[in-house]
Length: 288
Length: 288
View (cartoon, rainbow over the protein chains, first blue to last red):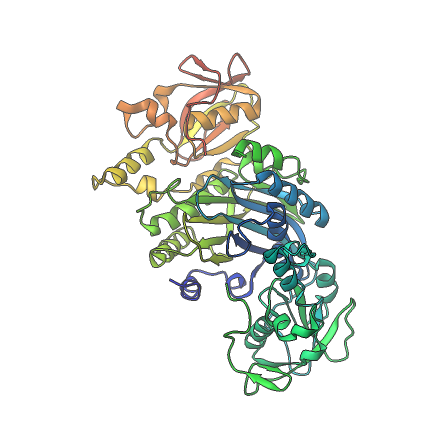
């Protein structure tokens, strides 16, 4: 079964009506007076990190990518649970884990460790509490909204290439991404829709458009990119964890952000880039 | 790094003072008026299930074992997040997942799927809400308490052997274990200490004794076993998910349970079985 078929099959299961974890990265549940945000993401050796990667970087990325999901919900992290397959360089893994948890001041709540053979997998569950409700989702963008990007895209691509080619150039954008928690919390009360860009700006914008039943019109030249001479690659490469937000027209973001387009009524295509309609998502970015 | 060393290293990380997830299977956190119980356990192909196992059974066991951790805390499940590596018989996996979630009336909140190669791993995070506080832990057993077992031990061993040897005998006790949620919730307000027996009665009793700084004195003949002629094996085999509870002397359990021993002040050894001191845990049961 491929991923799409598996997720379709899962959708037939008894899903909590309030939960949208399979559609939207995070689950949102209300318990008493609290609204909790839960997310679980995995990293697989060879797929999500290079086989000779520094395991401290892998631990950092495992935590930061899950916290980025919380950031897109405007959530404040409560803690993480780790699912760890023991293997090479576990000391480095623990060292990276210590660094990233201290950086974000997030406690490790528990987890499980297993001995394993073959390809290593690492799972992480992050738990957050909503700082504002309703919790932003990717499906709320409205015609007339402005589209904003917090952060730039393409830096992870350059970092990946530096690592892959052993150039010695800085690769932190790829190996130690940043979860934009403060920005997410600042934006949450103002946004109609928000998500983090994990699989490429264009692919994730396409998803926001489809979920919101609108058209996102992006001006490519407005997008902050790490490599202007490779603009299209920057727009389609993932792993940057910028935040994409739809704000009502005239609302000024309370954090550094760049206006990269507008939301229009659903037209011929869900996504329009520099006036060119994009009819389907194939080739737009990284699909796990 | 072996598991023990890894966990010791993790203990140096910024752990929430209220969390004891690494020591005690579950994390316990308080948010507003709610107390949450969180647990994350993994199953590994070849280690936790036979390579030709029915994947519907694997899904069932993945959920039930995590819910059993919640049961030992007297928690009511709120939902689960799944970390799934795609592979053979995913249809069967989804079918087993549907069955077990419907059986326990627990929603799937979200998760992640990855393509993988080699040994498959499956992770599950279960979230529960405490039905009584303080939440039972394994470290509260007190001298004078009586030791009770909810369920029997050894049935999983027989089920495993039936599967392994292809005898056609019933193997549900091994492949579709039961999480004793109702019993855990009924016992929680009355217990001084509680845990589920995942790695064998004697090993887990040893752990409760060490955590509580007491001696557990077990009468082997009192323990309900599935194979009386192999009593010692039943006492050391895991996977039965019975509940072990220390109740004040004179307190009658509000559910079916068997009194199997008493709690004594810490003596020569943490565990005494039929009058024989057990000085260390090696060989007592299954250690992951």
